Length: 212
Picture (cartoon, rainbow, N blue to C red):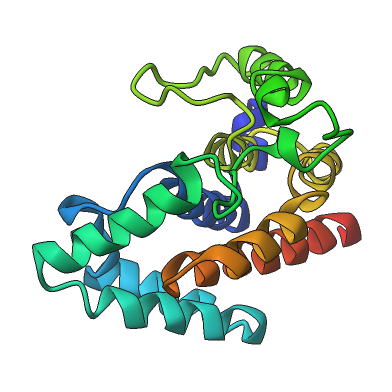
């Protein structure tokens, strides 16, 4: 039995699904295909299962509340504009999704930090796992979507101690600051709820791994 088979328990497979879901929502604007997937009966059953945790229930309800209003192209475009304003435009009214901007000394300025130390560290982790940032995703490797996707991969490939150490340093250490920023600048409710959900899930998961 190889390591992947050892670690690919039903619990870890479920954890990987949550991390992949969160990664997909931070990776790009919500489009018709992703909306269809999120509102499918299978996805809604998964959301309901997650919402059984009181720490996650309110934010999952907020996400679903927005999803249930996206009946027109205009509504999708408005949500896409929220995504762009939050994560693609580097202004004081945005919430940069890069770990580099929340970890370490930011006095040098955001431009210097992008593709910097955190990016290089994540590239090394990806290479060690024979992974890479997809060419159609032209972002630094310390983008939150990349880190969440990496954790999803590691969920079924690494022991609890290794996972916990990575999550604590490369996600849990900066998600509270990121979430505060999103909540401050998000003009809608979808991405604020997503950020809160991500922070709550990651913190809870980190605690559970530490306890194992």
